[in-house]
Image (cartoon, rainbow, N blue to C red; front, side):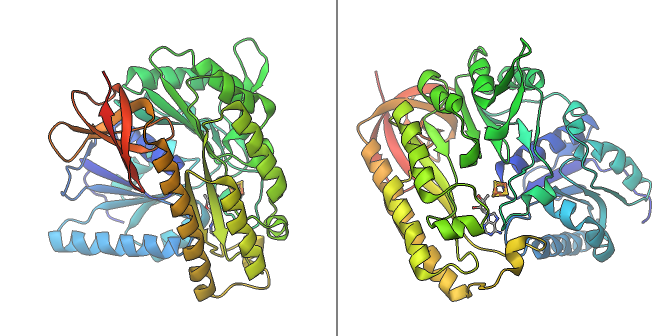
Length: 443
Ligand code: 5AD
Ligand code: SF4
């Protein structure tokens, strides 16, 4: 590679989960520290970071086509951008990307992106660089302070996963479970609030496995962290995602009842409603134990909104087994959910299992599952009409005087009136659609 002039502008394109969004923000902060500024909307950037996701379908192909598109546009404009590939595809296929895509100058894994500035210096000198090391936690200490942030911010508290669900690449791309230290998290939460956050979502691939030592040296789980964060002045709302049913302890259930700042919303993936499929997935719960767990959460917080993840067409899934998934959906009544067709991930046990399901069968099951989930989401929204709640204003609406924010149950709510981004406004919910509600300001 030829030496090049240092980039002046950057764009970080994040795909996939909220942890990638968080990582993308932090990479942007690192670049900003080097004096590189975000490329204005609609303009080409000198440096493009593709922050990739490997969880489903053709992730790598998508990266190569994105790279191809960037190179072509750059050639047409007479100025090719510097390209960095980050995220889980970088971790899983870094060497291959370097070999196949000469336009890429940096490949950086999710545990190594704090080294982006050094890699950038090398790239400017004409040297391609790959870093997919997985050192525990070092990254966070090396990151710059948080910049200005929106009212609803993310905070990664835990990374990696030890669960090894048989379909999932996360334990391979993100590595073993690690928890960030308590003290660092409290400090970062305070910084986020100083930078404008009023709501913080604690993130982790398996967030409920977080554990640490509090300021008195006692070992504490996620609930202990939440209770301490609830005392941060100016922080009004706390959420967390994503959880595994096996790691939900009594204290976390209790926190939903005794910590008002912890919002009444729980994302708890079940994946399937059938016990044979759950076992083959290496999920350590059954349909019954999952439902019993939800009952305990609902007893602590009766208005809890539930969300989940589902996979249809796991190898060997029969029509009757899929029907059990529809039954658990009926039994829970989710406020919101994510559903996916099973996608074989290279290197995972399920990818080589017998009984891979035909695409049209998966399409049909996904459609039936989604219509049940959509029905329940609409029903949940309709049942909210008439309630008065606080809405955290996140942005302006399309029309003058219109605002968009989130209810405690994570519904999008529109309303008109006097407000500003970051306000918590008391609103009566008056009308519902499948994806949002309309509200009227009270008082
Ligand atoms: N195929 C389809 N969906 C998957 N997920 C994870 N791995 C796969 C896969 N191989 C889904 C799960 C998980 C969510 C983040 O993505 O539902 O909870
Ligand atoms: Fe993947 Fe299972 Fe870990 Fe979730 S709990 S990240 S699905 S291995």
